[in-house]
Image (cartoon, rainbow, N blue to C red; front, side, top):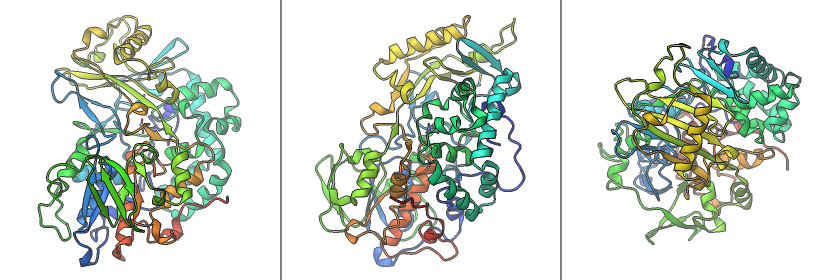
Length: 563
Ligand code: ARG
C-alpha cells in the first residue's frame, strides 16, 4: 500500500488490476481510450488538412500535435525555446554523451499509464529510479537534526519512523477512505470513486496538508508531524507542500503517483523528440511516412508573442518573428501564467472566470544541481562499517534530497546534489551555480565526514531554478486551499458546448490544467482532452465503441462546488 517512506518497500500488490492515475476527479480511462483499435475518432473529410495551432512544444503540446495529425489535421507547433519543455535532459560539456542530467521530469510512476503508452510507442526503455528506500536503491541515509540514520531497508530505521508511517496510514484510513478508494481505482469503479471523492472535496478543499495532519488524532505529536514532513511518503520530503490543499496530496497517494518511479534510459527528453519524428501507421488523410517533423519542415514555428481573436471563434497568432496566422482552433499547452505577461492576450480569449483561474494558479518553485563524477564511487564499501561510501540522502539541511545516479563501475556517473521545492528552492535562487555546489558539498561533508566528493567530480555542474526560467516561471502548479473551483474551470474548459460561441475553439492543456501537476501523466491526459475538444469542435466524433473524455462527460465530470 501507499505509505510513508519506512514502509515504501512493502508493496503487497493485491491481485487484479493495478493502481493507476484513474481519477479521482475525472475517472476516465485514458489508457483504454489510447489502446482501442478504433482510435481516438474521425473527422469529416472536408476538415482534413485544417491547420490547428499548438502553442508550446513540451510533452503536452507534442502529444496534442501528434494525435491531431493522426486525425488528419495539420498541427502547427509553436515553441519559443527547445522542444521538450520540462522534459529537459542536458549533457555536461566535455563529458561523454550518455552522461546526462534531468533538469525537469526525472522519475515516472508506472501508474501513469497514458504516459507509458507513448513511452512504449517510441520504444524507450525505463529503469528503476533510485528514490529513498526503493527496492533498487542500494542504501538510504535519513539525516535529521544532525543525526544520520543509515538504512538498506525501512526496518533498519529507528522505531519512530515506523510510528510516523503508521500515523500516516491511519490518517489516510480514518479521514480519506483510503482502502475503499484504492479498491475502486483498481476496479475502475467510477461510481464509487465519485461517491467517495465528491464527499471529500467540499469538506477538504479549504484544508491544507498540514491542517489535515493536525486534525488527525494519529498525528497528535508535533515531533511525528515534523519527521513526517521530512521523510513523508513515496519520494519523501513533502513538508514543502504543507501549505497546499490536502486534495492535491490525496490525488497523489490514491493513484500511486509517488510510487515505484522509473527513469527513461538515455533521458526524458527523448520522448517528445521521438514523438516529433514518429510516423504513425494508422494515420488519416496524410501519406504514410508523415510525422510532425515532416509537416514542419524539421523545426517548429518560433514562439508566440500575441494571441487574439480576429473573429469570434478564431484564434490569431502573432509569432516572435512578427508573422501573423489565423486558425479555426488552437491548443495552448505552455504554463498558463505565460498568458498574463509573456504573451500579449486579448481578453476575449476566455470568459472572465477562466482568467481568474489562470491568475490564481499557484506554481511551486524547484531547483536542482547535478555534477558528473568519475564512477559510482558510492558503491565502495567502508571496510570498517560495511556501509556504502555515500547513500541516497534525505536531509533537513539545504540540499534536502541527494540522488546517486548510475551503477556501472566502468562508467562515469552523476550526482543530483540537491532537488528542492518551494522555500527550499528559493533559498538557492540568488546563489550562483558555484555557490550552490559549495554549500551542498559542505552539507555532504557534515553527513559523510570521511568522503571527498569533490575529488570525483569530472566536469562543470549544471543547475536550474524553474521559477527563474522565463518561459516557465515555476516548476509545476500546486493548488492552495480554496483553489478547487479554479482547477475545475480550467480542466473542464475542453467541453465547450455551453460556452458562448465566441469563446470556443481555444483549448488548454498541460500538467497545470490537470489534477496532477508535476506528473507527466497530467500533461498527456489534458492533451487528450484538448484533442477530443478539437475533434468535437470540427464536427468529428469518436467511435461508439471507444468514447472519448468529453462523450460521457456528465456522468464522470468533476463535482461543481457552489459559489
Ligand atoms: N513528480 C515530481 C517529482 O517526483 C514532482 C512532485 C512534487 N509535486 C508537488 N506538488 N510537490 O519530483
